[in-house]
Image (cartoon, rainbow, N blue to C red):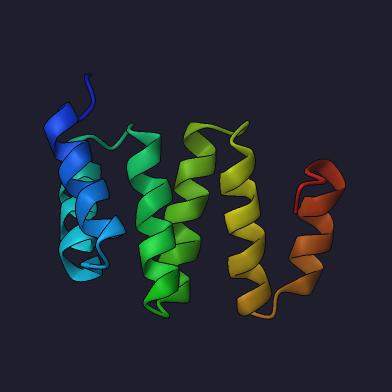
Length: 102
């Protein structure tokens, strides 16, 4: 199954970079629904949710991104930031033992 078109990704990133997070959020949701294996869609969805204060959504999206690409250091860092904001320091300690970038 293929990923989103280059135009969809550019539209997502353009809106995100321009601060139009509500639009970017909608595009990211559409992309992840149409292409659930597209790791970057989940990663940016997690970032958008965190910026909007939706920490549970950010956690779920970031975990999904990491399931799709466990080697993504940026996603590991994003996970640790969300866990810190959720006050789940014990989980960060466990996670950091195998992923020192946290």
